[in-house]
Image 1: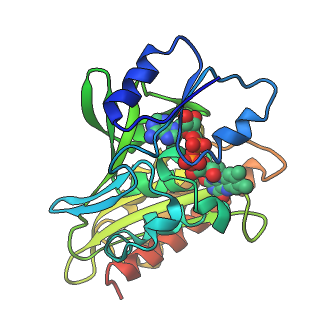
Image 2 (image 1 turned 45 degrees about the vertical axis):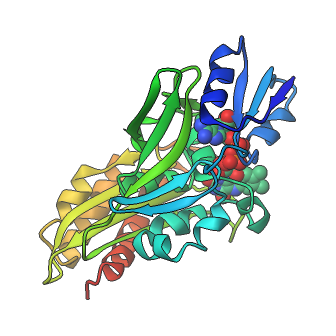
Image 3 (image 1 turned 45 degrees about the horizontal axis):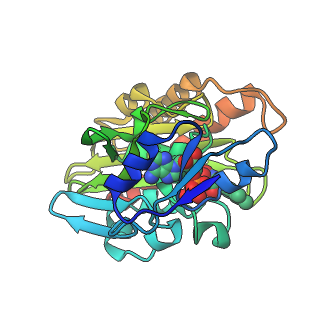
Length: 286
Ligand SMILES: Cc1cc2nc3c(=O)[nH]c(=O)nc-3n(C[C@H](O)[C@H](O)[C@H](O)COP(=O)(O)OP(=O)(O)OC[C@H]3O[C@@H](n4cnc5c(N)ncnc54)[C@H](O)[C@@H]3O)c2cc1C
């Protein structure tokens, strides 16, 4: 196996594009190194992206935030401006694993590992985040929701690397939140995860909403019906009931030892309601 640690994104994409087989980007390694322990796993080339200049930085721009693909989750909570703008995205990233894992893992690795239960992905989808993809033919921005195509699968082509996550600047009176259910208190995989992002008017009425569910389908489910149920409301009980029902209906989970289909569907509604109330309060709603 070859290990490369290029200094530029162009070198990294060229290495991946030129690889004959089984080439992987290495970010924090908290998924990849675990997979490498398996006898069935084979890698011919690992391209470690952590030495690429600027890829470990968070920067605030006029339009929002650019989070480099090698920024560890733990660093996100140290960026006060990011926490103030996108508390839900940061809380999702800070639920991944343990303190030790968060010191290494990245939200881009979480996205590209393409687990249906990945914690940061519903929060990023709710935030309408994009990723900047570098490849042999240049760079393009695409919505986060378009990256995972199924468990363990992404839409990235050969030679492509995600360079950064691009988060928009939230409009005034906006708030986001992420909640997950796990059977233990930490170090467990989400049975259901819910990301919510709301914008209110001056009177506290919801004017825009995005509700994204994780772990209840092969990829994140964006529930437009749940958003429609609360747009125009101040989260009265009827609106929250309709939101919860829409989330339960949109869930199409698997049945396993971690939770039955019926349980997961119910929890999706309960968590969506709670995360929406948190996002509403963060947006300044009373
Ligand atoms: C003990 C433990 C607990 C965990 N708990 C959780 C949890 O609670 N919630 C959760 O969601 N996950 C959890 N995980 C899984 C893992 O930590 C996360 O998915 C993490 O965010 C992966 O990030 P990474 O940087 O370590 O990715 P890596 O392992 O470096 O990479 C993961 C995959 O993404 C690809 N990749 C990485 N970066 C890029 C890039 N820039 N462009 C293209 N492809 C890329 C890699 O090639 C690889 O296929 C846990 C893992 C462990 C070991």
